[in-house]
Image 1 (tube, helix red, strand yellow):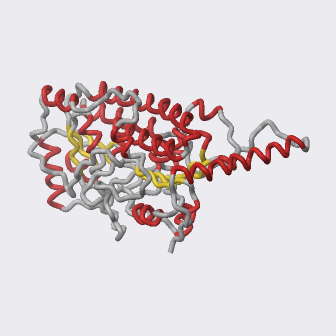
Image 2: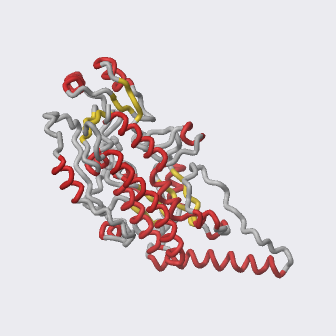
Image 3: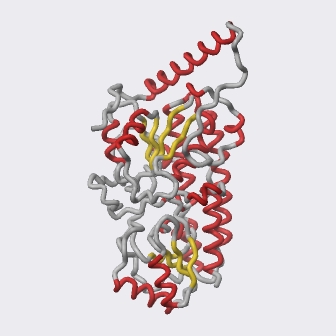
Length: 395
């Protein structure tokens, strides 16, 4: 049974703990200077087991004593990059799901649970993505572990087990696409809007869109958690994480906000490039291995045609496969998208049946070892997705 610390969490208590660490570090520095053993270079914390996430230049330039760094655990890779880009050198950020592991399959070990309970902060996506997270959140009540649900307050869309109602009446008119695009606010003025403010709470309560998955069956409960694959939604998640960290640790709020703004500028450019690249493609529908791209499709006027449902492990039935093949032939689909971290056998089978090719459309649920070796990150992988979509939708 996981045992959490008994101190009740509040912003003031979290900040007090952090100030004690700072005072202890300052006292130690003063003693070293008096004894002639001072060192102008602050001790660096041990490198984390997480992949590099390209923090802002301001964060890279800082040097913070190890004792002053926040200890933050994050659930899977996108949460790592978003959080590390905000905290820079002010925190040790470690991702729980290791490279090469599909996060739908992963559950924390006893050691992972102990590491989480010893951390200052846990950041997770929510909306049912991490089936184990609600147990942590429930257990954190009355402890000093701060939990941040990055998707809290966002409009979570319903996903279906099989989204194959392919009447193909999704030949969106230019007017419909313009109207849909107008519904989205792309002002990104970095004000912490309503969704970010709602995401900043640490009251450990179970929000309306979260899904309780005590049985850990990797079912998202009918909700689509893949919000990070829409750059606009990713901005909202970054804002929510930054707002929550700034509220808990106001002494670092200015740095967190500056780092967040720098990273959001990159996400805004990514959004602009997706919008420009996908605006006038020859076709608007794409077939993908599992239903991970609903938010991206909705944002840019596309239609996702998934082979399986929200879980990548879900195997389609023979009838569903036949429907996909029929749809692909009728609409002259030339590319079947598969993804990293799971088998491509179903996509390969359909591609062979219709004489199409396969290509990667990456849900960025984790990095492969090859991604790590090539220093790829969320931004570069999303740009690879954009290039793949542009090519497939213009054939």
